[in-house]
Length: 93
Image (cartoon, rainbow, N blue to C red; front, side, top):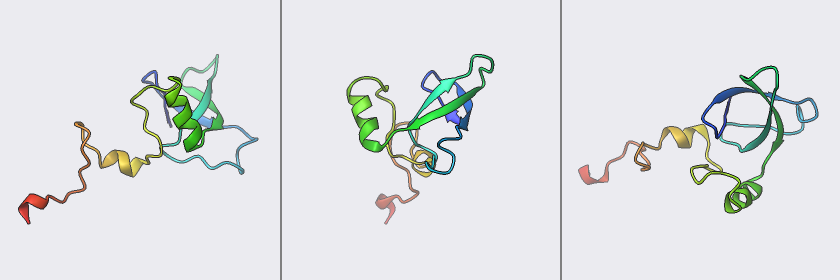
């Protein structure tokens, strides 16, 4: 699944040229191409490295809310107010 910056979640299909050469994991920034005939599916065209994603964010091509180098585990541990919640409260110790 790909979470697009327009707010929609679409099914991403890795193209054959990338299939066994480039590994795409959760949290990666990828370039996708929307299909004209299927709105719910996209083709993954390119996987950006962390440096490329930072440059895109700096140039304003990615929204400020884009998170670079964060996996699904990192996203699950973050609360709505932006604080990390790993389950340890040091005030109680």
